[in-house]
Length: 108
Image (cartoon, rainbow, N blue to C red; front, side):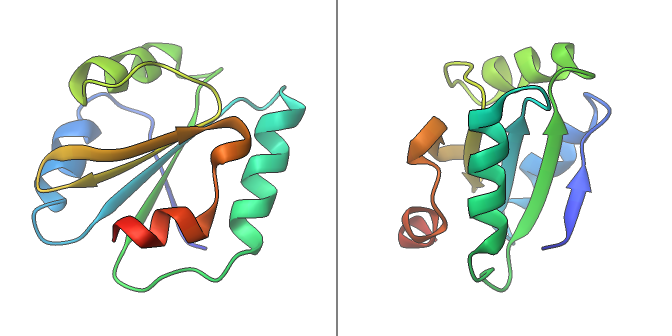
């Protein structure tokens, strides 16, 4: 999986704009949480769909960006959390044990 790190709030506008041509996935990861590590590992082991951009946020180092994602895409903040952005909007979000590639693919 080719992750694009999110480390600036300005990237959210770029992700939103890109979502009009290519689905965008944001994975918010807490590097100190075992549930988050398990969800990320399980997600990365699954077959990756084509024509999707995957973005990774280390929410401990970029907490302000994590909070802005919740506001910007109008979702409740969770950790870990997976968001699917299409046509400028978050059409799917899941957290904790619910993060599964199969579920994501069903929304693509």
